[in-house]
Amino acid sequence: MRLKTKFSLFASLLVTMVLAATGLLFMTFEKQHLIKETRENQIALVKSLAGVGREALLRNYDLFLIDYIKIIKEGNKAVTYALFVDNENRILAHSNPQLLRQIVKDTIGIKAQSSQGLLIQSYQRASEEPHQEIIDIALPVFLGKQKKGIARIGFSMTVLEEIIEGTLHETGKRVLGVALGVLIFGLLGAFILAATMTRPIKVLVKGADLIGQGKLDTKIKVDRKDELGWLADEFNQMAERLKKLDQMKKDFLSGVTHDLRSPLAAIESYVNEMLEGGVEEFAKTGIEDLNTIKNNTIRLSRFINDLLDAAKIEGGRMEMEPRLIDLSSLVTEVTTIFMPKAEEEKIDLRVELPIGLPKVFADGDRIGQVLTNLISNGIKFTPPGGTVTINAEKMIENPEFVLVKVSDTGVGIPSKDLDSIFDKFHQGKDVFEYVYRNDRLPEDMDKALDKFHYIREVREKVKKGKGTGFGLFIVKSIVELHGGKIWAESKLGEGATFIFTLPVKSGKIKT
Image (tube, rainbow, N blue to C red; front, top):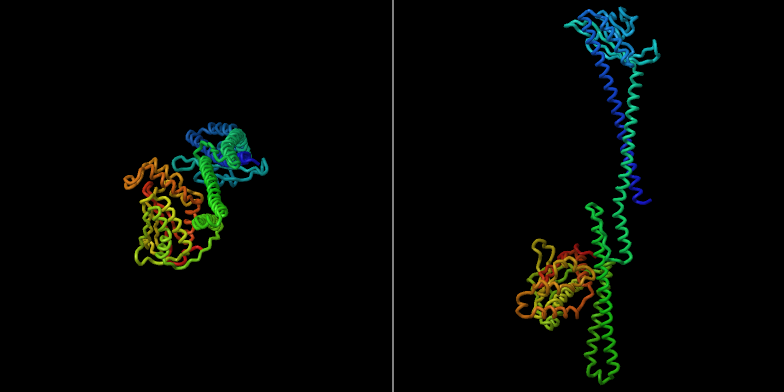
C-alpha cells in the first residue's frame, strides 16, 4: 500500500474517530443539560403556581387558581396533575375538578404537608397507568410566617423521557449533518495533505534513483521549512559529499595507476638498459642504476604498505605492540633519517625537546610511522629556506599525556580543509591557488623569492612526491588507537602545525 494511501486512510480514520467521540460527548452533555433544564422548568412552574395560589389566598378567590391550574395541565403534556391545598391539606384547586374540597390523605401528600420548603418526591403510580413513575414537586406558600397552603404538580417521567428523547433525536440529526459535512471536508483535507506530504518524498526517491544511476550532480528542490525540507537539504549535502568522494576516488585511482606504473616503468627501463649495455656499461652506471631501482622499489613498498595499513584500519586489524618507549630517542632517530633530505631541499630541520621528557606508552614502530609522515609532509610543503620543527612537552592541563608538535613554514592549509585533511584520499591540491589569490605569503619569503617562483617551486616539489591520500588518515588512526588526539592548526601562507597527544601510562591504548 502506498504511503499516500496509508496517510489518507489514517487521517480519515482519525477524523472519523474524533467526530464520533465529539458527537458522543456532545449528545451525553446535551442529554444532561436537557434533564437539568427540564427540572429547572418544573420547579419554575411549581413556583409560578405557588405565586398564583398566594394571590388567590390573599383575595380569597379560588376560581382564579382553578383556571391557572387548568392552563398548566393543558399547556404541558408532562403534567399528570396539579393542585393547591390549604394548611389543612384540603384541595382548593385541582386539575381534576371532582377532587375539589377533598382532604389529601396519601403518603406523598402528607409528606408535602409537613414540608417547610421545596420537596421533590418520586413514586410509582399504578391506579391509572401501571408502573408509571411520577415526580411530585411541592412548595409551601406562606402569608407572613404562617404556612397557608401548598402548591403541587406531578410530572410523568415517561412523557418527560419521550420529550427529551425527541429533542435529542432532532439535535442528533443536526449534529450528524454537521459531522458529515466536517467529515467530507476532513477527508478532502487529508487527501490534499497526504498529496502535499508525499510529493517531496517522491522527489527524494527520484533523486536517490538518479544518484544510484551514477548521476551525482543531481540536486532536488523542495521549498519547505519543515522536516521534509531539512531532509531535502541533507540529501543535497549527501549528494555533494558523494560527488566529492567519487572525485577523490577517481583521483586516487589515477594516482594509484601513476604511482604503480611510474616506479615499475623506471625499474623496467633501467633493467633493460643494464641488460643491453653489457658489462662495460654496467661498470660505468650500474651502481647508480641499481640505486635508482632500489629507490623505486622503496617507493612501491611504501605505497603498498599504506594501502595495507588503510585496509587493516578499516577492518579493525591494525596490530599494536605497546610498551614504554623513550620519545626523545624516537624523535631524534626519525629526524636523523630526514636530515640528508632536508639539507638537499635547503630546509632547516630542528628538534626542540625538553630535558626529562617522560616516556610514553606506545608502539614505537607505529609512532615512528606517524612522525615519518608528518615530517615528510612538512619538508614537501616547505620551500627552500624554510623550517620544519619537531618539539614535545608534557601537558600541564592533563599530565597523563605528552604533546607532540610538527610545525613548518610552508604554504599552510586552507581553513576549510582543516577538518577534512585526515579523510581518506584527501590531498591538498588547491592550496597553491589559495595562496596565490589571497596573497598571504610570509614577509621573509616576499623579500627572498618572487611570489610566482615560490608557488611554482613548492608545486613542483609536491608533484614529485605526490602521496596516496592515505597518509594523514593512517596517522590519525594510529594516534587514536593509542588513546590520543590529533589536529592541525594553520595560517594560510605561513605554515602549518600538526599536534598530537600520546599517553604516558598503559590503559589508554586500544589493541
